[in-house]
Image 1: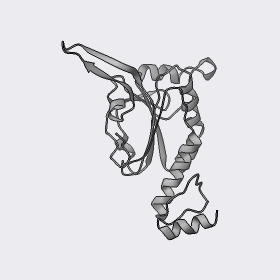
Image 2: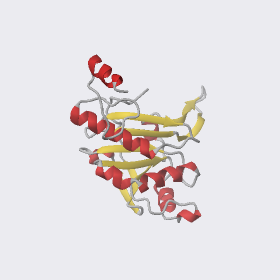
Image 3: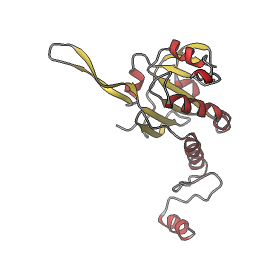
Image 4: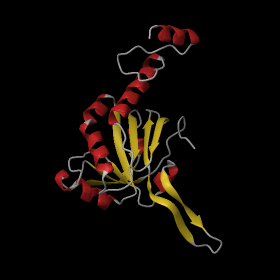
Length: 208
């Protein structure tokens, strides 16, 4: 079930912030008044994941200019996050990443956001098992200043995401919030948007 248009599920968990500090009772509530890009990745010390995580860090100034914070999450522990964050990049680490990485060791956050790659099952004898992938898919949620999910994307494990596209969507959401104009296909900041009327659409398309 999509979370778009709904309040982002709340949680409290341990996160590693600033690359080396443990923060207890971390939640997204602290960022009210800012946009939040909350993204899930499968596991620490893997292959596609560091390319995405570092790509977000390299564009962090662009997110900050847009009053947006970036938060990552996986089913690893805070200790695994810390170790990866303090491993040099030339040895497979993500040293230099400063935005928060949340520990979802019990997988409850992944379940709340509907991105867990499998599910827990109980048989007739009461035995608990897990069917599917016990990690999070590559879910990404753009949450507005009031805590409402405005965009979600879920990729399978081998498909990396585009940080540039996330920035484009933030610009589109900001334009909509500021001017009430909707943003057409492949819209970028500075381009013409359109009024949400049939005449507005016709006028826009006539100029294409």
